[in-house]
Structure formats: C-alpha cells, structure tokens
Length: 297
Length: 283
Image (cartoon, rainbow over all chains, first blue to last red; front, side, top):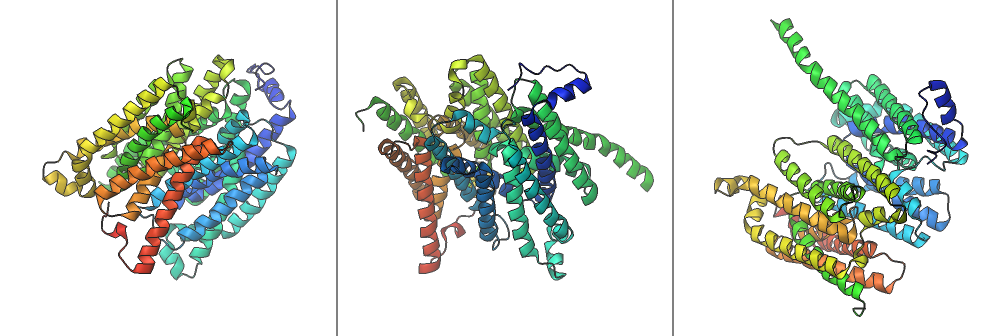
C-alpha cells in the first residue's frame, strides 16, 4: 500500500490530485464505481426476493473460480464470470422445482460452500502458495486492476443492467406477488432463472473488487439500507445505488491514505450507513405513530 | 505414515476434533442451526486474528470469541429472530474487522506475513506440536462426552420442544448450553480445518447421517463415524498426494460422504418406494 507516498492534507484539491496520481488508483475508482452501481441494483432485487443465501453461495463459488483460472493461466475475469455464471445456472435449475427452502436444504448449502472454499484452497496451493494472492482473492484489493479488467466490467455491467431495465417491471411484479403475476401471464419461472444468472454475473464482478468473502458489502448492505428507508422501488433503487457509490468512494479513499485494508474500510462504511438508517427509522417511528394518533383522534 | 511425529499428532488431534464435530454436527443439522455454525466460523476468524494482533495466544481468542458469541446467539435467539439480511450484514462486517486485525498483525511482525491468515482460515493440522495435539485431543474428548451427557434431553428438546417443556425439560437452558458447546467445537475445528471450512465438518456428516437413518441414536453414531472416517481418509490422502492440503482433503472426503448419502436416500425414495427418512423426524 502506498502509504509512504500519500499523506492526507485535508485540502480537497490536493488530496484529489494525490488520489488520482497513479493509474492503478484511477482504474480502481472506475472499477469500483461500475461494481457499486451493478451490485447495488441487483442487490436491491435480491434482498426483495429473499435470495440472500443464494447470493452468499454464489460469492463463495467465486473464490475457487478465480483460483482455478489463476492456476490454469487463464484471465481471472474468465474464472470469476465462468464459475459464478455456471453456479447460478445450476442453482436456478436445482431450486426451480422447490417452492421454499427445506430443512435439509441448509445442510446442502453448507456442504457446497465448504467444498467450494476447500477446492479454492487446493488451487491456491497448487499454484505455488502465493499467499498475498490468496488474501486479495478472499478479501479484495484495489491494487493491480488493469484497464482491460475495467473495460470487461463496464461491458458486463452495461449488458446486464440493460437486461435488468428491460425485465425490471415484470420482475418486480413477480418478486412481490408471484401468484398474481403468474395468473396475469408473467413468465415467473423464466424470470427467476434469468435473474439468478444475472445475479451470478453481478456477484462475479463485485468479487473482483471486494473479494469473494466480502461481496455482501456491495450486494446486501446498500440494499438493506435502502429498504430500511423506503419500500418504493424507484427511490429504493436510487438510495441503494447511492449507498453503494458512497461505500466504494469513501472506502477506497480511506484505504488509500491509511495502512489498513480496503475490506475493513468498505465493510465499516457500509455497516455504518446501515446502522444510521436503522437509527433514523427507529427515531422516526414514535413521531409517525404520534401523528397517526393525532389524526385518528 | 505414522512414523512421522507430525502425522501422529495430526491423527490424534484430528480424531478427537472430528468426533466432537460429528456428534455436535448431527444436532446442528437436526436443530436447523447451520446458520449459527456459519456465523461462528466468521467470528472464529476475527477472534483468532484479534488475539494474534494483540500478541496473545490465538487459541485464547478463538475460544473466547466463539463461546461468547454462541451464548449471545442462544440468549437472543428466542426473542429476536434476525433475518438473513441482518445476519449477512453483521457477519460481513465481522469479517472486515478480521482483515483489520490481520493487517495490524502482519504490520507488527514482518516475519509471519500472510501465513497467520492462512492458518486461521484453512487450518494447520499438520503443523501441530505434540503438546498442542494432546490439548486439542483432550478438549475434543471432553466436548464429545459433554454432548453425550446432554444427548437424551437435548434430543427430546430438539424434536418436540413443546412436549419437552411440558414435562419439565429445561429447553431454553439446553439450547444455550448446546450453542456454547458448538462454540467450543467451532474453535477446536478451526485449528484442524480452519475457520472457513469448519462448516463442512459440521454440516456434511450430520446431513449425511440424517439422510441415511431416521433413528437418532444410530444417526448420532453414524455422523461421528463419518466425521472421523473423513478426517482419517483426508489425512492419509494428503500424505500420499504431495500438493493436496490436509483441510481440502478432509472436506473433500466429507463432501463425498454427503453426496453418497444423498444418492442413497434418493435411490431409496425412488427405487424401493420406502418413505424418505426426513418425513418421519421433522425438526
């Protein structure tokens, strides 16, 4: 980490110049921005649909995917997108027949996760024990993001967000009330499969910045913050994306100027936003109740 | 293979640890508390690295963190049922804290950069000294005995809490005691297969045993046998195959056992037309 080069001067102009002095940091900010929008948008739908556990599994699968790609000499991005996309497809087909999570299901998910992580550890060992590499695969890094990677992320984000916009309205309908939506002729099942595969791509993109274990920083926490504040889809999505951007920008900036890792700062900013939203709602509730009581009487 | 001291240590510690994991894991699956196990694995990582950063024994951090959080979950669990989103947010932050302690630790001791994280995340059973192995074995055996002592009322309380409460079984206290025991076992297992993989050693044997038999006593024994067998097979495999890490091998064997059990249950459900075992014992 370039701590010996960067010193926070509290002068916004010179600080910004320091932040963008190196190409790797500019690329990290670009990639982080793309991923923040992507993760927050898909995360909002994921939380709405109650598929947090599926998202967790997909993010764990990103680790063996990336480690396997590194081992095989393939580009890391291919490993991320390939493994998460494939896992999403499998998950979509395997869970399509079941309505809800059965009791035995959570044991299966636990086994799948542990096996994926064990496989990833094996690949890292076969690769020759690059320990620093292992840490960045698990907990993320802002060093070493290439211009090519940023471009791939941008294309993936544009395509998957375009599809999300196209299916957004029926997807929202199908998520909130699947029975009525099905009766209304909405292809609920096909939508679920498409969404899960897109979610896999979003997780794969997010994992490249946050690391496989901290994907929820951008996937769940901004969405959870937004859903504390509003249930309406438009403002909710906007707040979610805004939170994601704040998390990435503030997290990257502090991480750049401090000796401590991005994973810690990003999760702390995201968790702080979430707590603030909860406190705000808790503080507003008695007042709203009092207003309601006054209106009724 | 057993001529090497590190392999003898690994077998000694691994047997006791996996015995405890298998016994506790069966109840974890039966009581549908996989998520608590998942939570404890995050806490184990952060606790161990916090102790390392503070210059204390890693095991102290492991045990204090997992037992404290397990009891906390047990006490809160009844009243507040937090949803996936809350749990996900809290535990990702806990992991983030773990990376902070990791950075503090690696900055403090330049000689050990990186390996501390790997040891905590993925275990280091082949690196145990004779004293450490004996201590781990002793704790594992005590945990297994404690669970067997609790097993009868705990089984009753898990399968039918209402009736058990009516007959004067202290259901709530049992739940908290069980989670505290789970904390001990999670801290133990972190030393063998690591914080990230201990969920596999809890869930796979228990899940496989539940698929194979509906009888709880047979299931308990089967779960312990699968856990110990997976550990032995994994250790032997990683000894024979040079590049295969021990923890990956152990989890690989446990996963294989789970897959075989699932296939057997599926065949029995479809081929022979017998009722599926889960149907008889609803948790």
